[in-house]
Amino acid sequence: MNRRVGLCFLLLLSACIYGSFAMAARKSFMDEVRESEAPFDNRTVPLEKQVIEETVVTMSPNNDEFFRVLARKKQIGRYKCSSCHTDKPVKARQGLELTHSDVVLQHGLGGRALVCIDCHHREERDYLEDKKGRKIDFDHSYQLCGQCHFRQKRDWLAGAHGKRVANWAGERVVYNCATCHNPHSPRFEKRFPATYSVPLD
Amino acid sequence: MSSDKKHPKESDIIKLLEGDSSRRSFIKNLSIAAAAGSAALTTGCIPSLAEASTEEMKLRWQEFFKKHYRLMTQEEKDAAVGRLERLAKLENNLDLQMGSEPPIDGVLYGYGFNITRCTGFMECVTACIKENNLDRKVHTQYIRIFEMEPGKLDPSTGDGQYYHEVPVDNKFYMGTQCFHCENAPCTKACPTKATWKEPDGIVVVDYDWCIGCRYCQAACPYYGRRFNWGKPEIPKDEINTKQHYLGNRIRPMGKMEKCTFCIQRTRKGRLPACVEACPTGARVFGNLLDPDSEIRYVLKHKKVFRMKEELETDPKFWYFID
Image 1 (cartoon, each protein chain N blue to C red):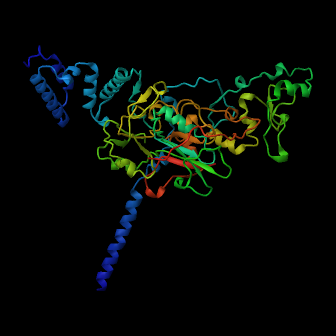
Image 2 (cartoon, each protein chain N blue to C red; image 1 turned 180 degrees about the horizontal axis):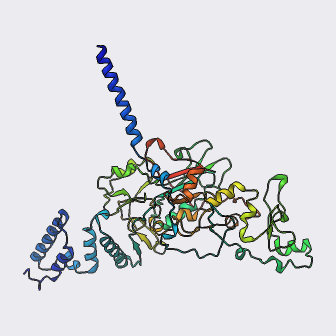
Image 3 (cartoon, one colour; image 1 turned 90 degrees about the vertical axis):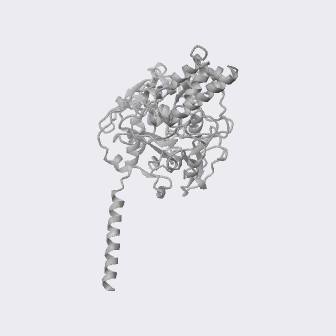
């Protein structure tokens, strides 16, 4: 009797061990994904649609690789700023009425709300300026935004924030910060959805 | 009376159907024989044979007897696509550019959805409807966006029919569509093998092989599939003419359809329409086998989860949190 119980126990044990091996042997596609470390050349994929927007090469690389970002200067209505902001002093009141009255500043919280020269260069109006006093080109505004929004910048560089333009393949071209966000009021405004849904079947 | 001079069309038909000897070709020959026989009886008053001479009937005939997409050679696929283009021109005067691009080597598509970024604007839904020629009459949508209470992660608890200003404070938004499971239950349920997983991970439907039994719809735990109850109605000027055989070509009545990751775009390097339309960048798409791709970064560095993971369907669609 004892021997029979022992045999049963042995059988059960071996079944369990075999079962666990079988479980481990079953391969998920995620194993294949994890193991694929060979670089994939996106440029080998023939593209149907080329990016026609003007782009510049970024100053900050992602994993030592430089990519392209949508240029901004042509999108800014009154660029170059130095065509108005000359050596002659501009009266603040007149300036606001004539040119920048449409700007609503809603950037920064509570008492730490931002003012113009927090981002714009104090003297050279064709440029931005960060807190270290670096002169920053409008096309490379991510350098400026990233000084506060460093988490977003880290994600943006790698592609978890923002998005690519048109193609998943080909040379990497991404949206600039200010392509999506209004820098003066970066939060997306509330609005009605583009469509509605009806119940399924 | 069966001489070639009297019935030149008949020999034409046989010529264009020649080539293979299978059960299908046997049926084909049977039906040709039947048509020829009845034609002989009524001496040419049968409209079917008369119409068979027209280009349209010939094309429809060939379409009806074509093979399953997976059994076709690339030449046969090209021929089928050419026929469908020509038929669209003859029937509806539409100039289509239909493709049958094969999967790209070394590519496995994956999708990320950022539930912290989505604000429920539903731009993705409208873009999808336009891109994929979805029926405007019954308002078919592949993508659904749910307004969710904080703490809940099951879309069935959310509101899928909201229409008010979004985003609402203290709510979050979660989109669903076909998740392109690696272990897809829908493909196993199909009795005619009309739906399968392509090597690049996209689960597709051969609309001409689908019999509309809706088993796949019942098998899908994510409500990812849609059924054409009627003939899809799309305003002619809104039809997307860039199509793919397995993708956004206009489905006939009584067929199953679903999100194909915009196969007509993605196999040519483009982003799916929903990703391109998303105004908040909540959608990430890329090649899972590319270690430098955006989707791989998301999988490596973000908190990700998949819906109903316990079912072991292995979807290629991850939700993530910033």
